[in-house]
Image 1: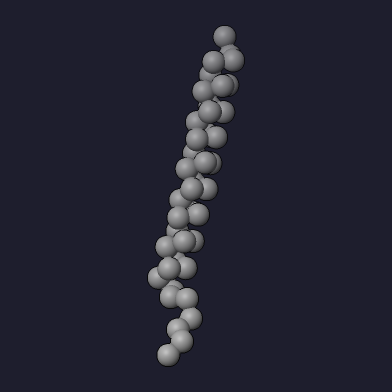
Image 2 (image 1 turned 180 degrees about the horizontal axis):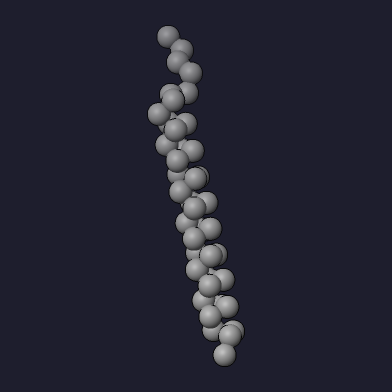
Length: 41
């Protein structure tokens, strides 16, 4: 019996990539906020 790649594996992989993207976006947003706060007198 040959099974196609399990949906659970694909779902976990997608979730991991999405989580990494959200973390990167949050870090970038926080960095921008800190930069603007420090740049303003």
